[in-house]
Length: 178
Image (cartoon, rainbow, N blue to C red; front, side):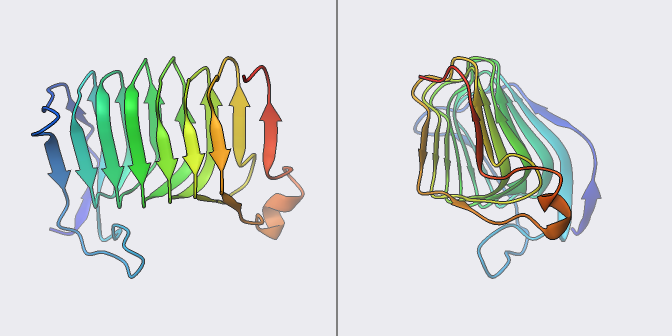
């Protein structure tokens, strides 16, 4: 049913590697294969949950706090990976705003997405590959002890004229990353 559902949903239970818990929206897809905004949800919090798949979803935000084996595909949302979450993959999605990977998280993969920007703070082995990054502000920021971070084959679109005078654009900050 089309509409906006602003409730926050918290998932604390886990699936298994062979039988993950899967959330699949029946939303119409746009021609580029992303979730349509004809219906949307509030925030989804995965709190210590593992082996979860989220597909074709339009949500305000997905927060992965702890847990592992999380896959987001063909979604339209913002994303925060934190609190030691591991093996989180977001692909073929529209990730609006700033994607944040922090809090000791490990092995996060962001690939073939449209992303407003990425901030990696103290997370290890994060891969940002094959994405299109656009928006106001830094496209990619890597700070703190973010060892093993890989940035490969990303396209950084020019910001709009309104943003160009406010922020420099591109890979703007790498501090203490090894």
